Amino acid sequence: MKKLFLFATAASLFLFSCKDDSADPNGGGTGNTTTAPKSYTQNSVIEYFSGAWCGYCPDGWLRAESIMEANPGRVEAVVIHRGDGMENPNGVTIDGQYNKAGYPTGMVNRIGGTTESRTGWNAKVSQVLSNAGKCGLAISTTKESGTNYKVKIKLGIGDKDLPDGSYKLVVYGVNKVVTGTGSAFDQVNYYYNAAQFPGHPYNNVGRKVTQSNGAIIGIIEGYEHKHVVSYVLSNALGDPVDSDKVKAGSLSEYEYSINTLGDDVFIMAMLYENTLATGTSFVHNASWVDVGSSVDFK
Image (tube, rainbow, N blue to C red; front, top):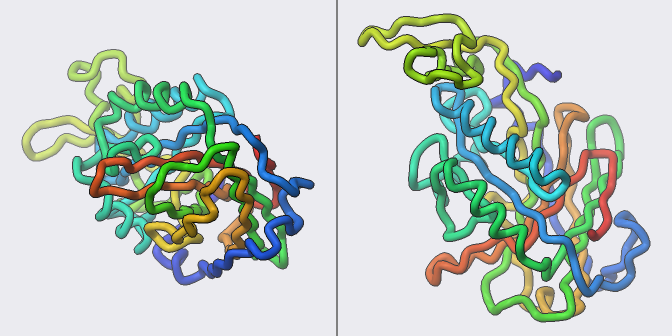
């Protein structure tokens, strides 16, 4: 477990750079792949908007965690925070672009380009996973010094062109667990009152607080905030991917660097079609790996 007390300073410690190495797409770092595979496993990603102040948000994580457990290795959830000690400027930009429905809400593969209620996540994940993967991402992370890592991402396209659209590569650095002290980290829990929410896992969890209107809530001190998006290696809304890089058989490579606050971080990369005006927004595939490790195409 990792404690981050001055999380707001994380953004100032984050260094990133990006380049398209497609002139030499077969550089080392992501296995021995020298050609793009023809087929891929389709993965799904849940981007969930939350806040320590949001009393219903712990339920969102329970639902996301349940979906991940039901689909091991094929679904990953990441959490973007607003209004608390885990907020960062890139997260604010992402939230402003996509979150139109409040908290707790989320996106599954960014379908439709906006958030929806957590009650709809499971069905959307099943929908995504029923598709055949048309592209894939391999990720290599290599320690350079201390907590500095080089991140290489290979994008491979299968035996068919991806649909015409505006494509972007989105790359996150995600802390597995964040804890802290004080109101910026203590989690508000509206499920404390067992009479109002019978049988909920968060019944009677936390320190009991009676609000001025008589409502009973809990304050969970030392709450473990899971899968917090702490860094955005790409631009907040993604780095453009050239149209020729989404043609059949294409293999391209992108390079970033990250200075983490520790080694409990994983990297997530997503290829996103962001043609919002036509409603075709979609993360075509995603991949993730711990810093210090690598994952090849699947």
